[in-house]
Image 1 (cartoon, rainbow, N blue to C red):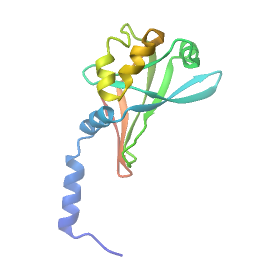
Image 2: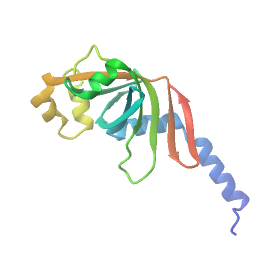
Image 3: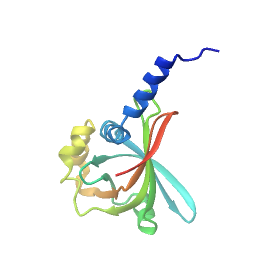
Image 4: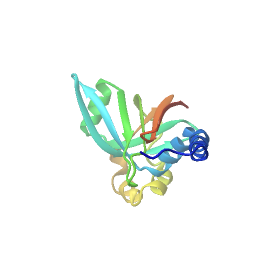
Length: 157
């Protein structure tokens, strides 16, 4: 069994202490493009992958869906949701949160440039079917940030 030297241990502790999980939260929300969105109706969970945009100054997640989509009915019946970001970078780093999904006063056109900057070809989707999309928002107060098995923490936003 190998043991860390005192110097190695101090370096690791310093790295952990210097890791700012709020900064990591912002980075993950900026870099990851999809969330697994969970809704519940009649006691049954429903999960699907959706694209999202996070507005850091508002602490708000935005996602769009077709007006006739089943999740519209599910959210109308019970707006309480949970989500986790979906990592695609070969790591397990992700953000988990819960809140209430509400129809936004904004439209997908209002955030089109922001969605398109984050998600390749999303502008084509907006151009083709934007009138058929409803924009939802989820205001966040807290989130759980997971970087790896040693770095998991709930943060207040």
